Image 1 (cartoon, one colour):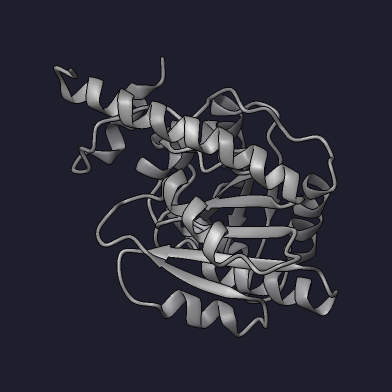
Image 2: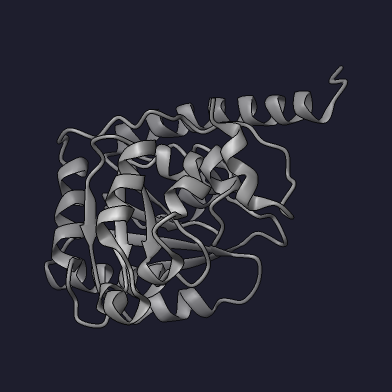
Length: 247
């Protein structure tokens, strides 16, 4: 019997990791690569993902997307404009996706022949960072309007990223964003990870991001981040204290 919240959390994450490992093997047999997109709300990831999906459709690539939110199907409606198969996943208040949820949708919905599945996780850089979905590539996105110190505030998310995407770069000047400081902060928590600069409004970075994803799908090398998903308690009122999770 679990005697503490921490033990319960450890047990939940252990079960999730086991399911994720099985799902990863199953997807590999089917030739499907999953891209897990993590970010704060308002980072611009839905708009950027819509651009990436549209470009993939233009090229005749077999892509699909799942988008997760606590409520509404707004993001699915937006992404569907790309022409790619899209499904909304409603979490009913859960702050993150888990492997069991993704598995259910892969089994019941994933279109035949799709080799690339983008998963837009719930907008949150705390809980989703701890849950492996069986993904082939984990991407963490951040807008320039969020501040250069975001990687230090959320080291588990940025430290587990296999690719980092900087969004809304057209606002770097008005936001007074210090890109050098941001890159240094990223290196502190995840040495060697690539940072892709993007702007959904102008289309900058869309092709680069798609090429990075396709390279992983086709068996190319993947960055090995220093942090694996870590357990945490669901205390959301002090997200900035997440740094305490890093030893």
